[in-house]
Length: 110
Image (tube, rainbow, N blue to C red; front, side, top):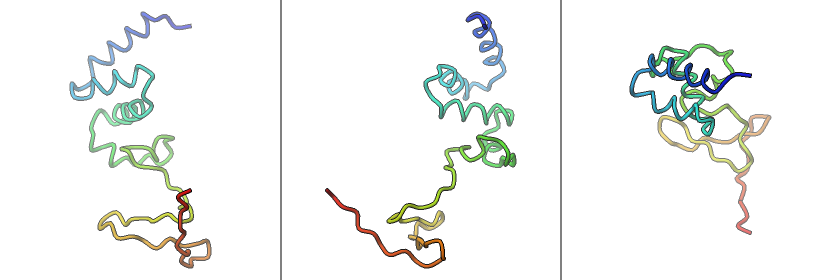
């Protein structure tokens, strides 16, 4: 079992090497109350606290790769979903497994 003072010492040692703008994020991550902060801090630490490097990450095998920089893992659209093209926000056509457009679904308000 690790002592609380040992953990505190390690946290302080790490904080000394973290750029000031990311110290708050690291402290939030270490509270254990924010998984999002923990993932961000982990990725930033991995690339030497260089924010732009997180966006350019090439480690496709990293378990956090799909979550880096607030991106979402790829998922299949639910029926009735409207997907937006990233660059111009034009609705994309949602297609079924055969590649045919799915009919528009009405969502019940009940």
